[in-house]
Length: 113
Length: 114
Image 1 (cartoon, each protein chain N blue to C red):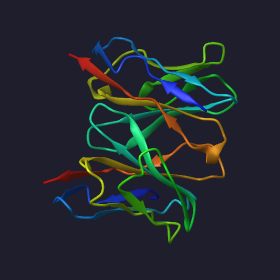
Image 2: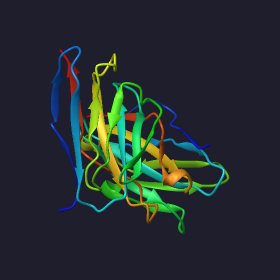
Image 3: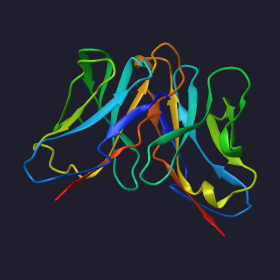
Image 4: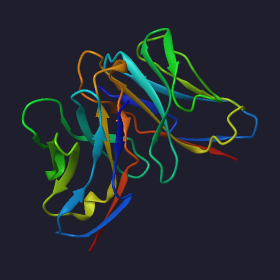
């Protein structure tokens, strides 16, 4: 079945460490997105990519980095510059050929220890 | 610019009662509208969407929503709540520009009392 796979489901980071969250899709979707979700808050856009080897900053890009070397993959690195990284991270994708909304992964919960 | 407002961050209903979750949007062009549901520690799942055509849209799990252009609303309803409906619900809008990105509302947590 086609879908989006995020891994790991739970991730623990020590202070000062960089960590990378994986997002892989086999839907042949062109666009991919990363959102951050904090308790009681909505979704905030971190980065998005409309095409391979191109990506744009969202509303809260500081302290994060991404790459888009393959259509299927859009990993997110949470750097040590991100002062409050504990959150639930969601990856999404969509086909730019139609207006059919996003398909979401199941999320990664990142906790700083 | 487009925006979405969900009235009520928390809604509580009794099992069997009507569910009504409110969503108002602003968009400079005809909108595409979506409702998503999120269960704890999971991603968002599409409930239903409006793109064109019939303004009353039926989705999964017995939910439906009606696009009312004059009221710029897309409220989500279900005639009879079930315990399994307890979740967070997000309304979203896309206006077909800026790469068809979705703008999300702040979410409404639905609680269902036995």
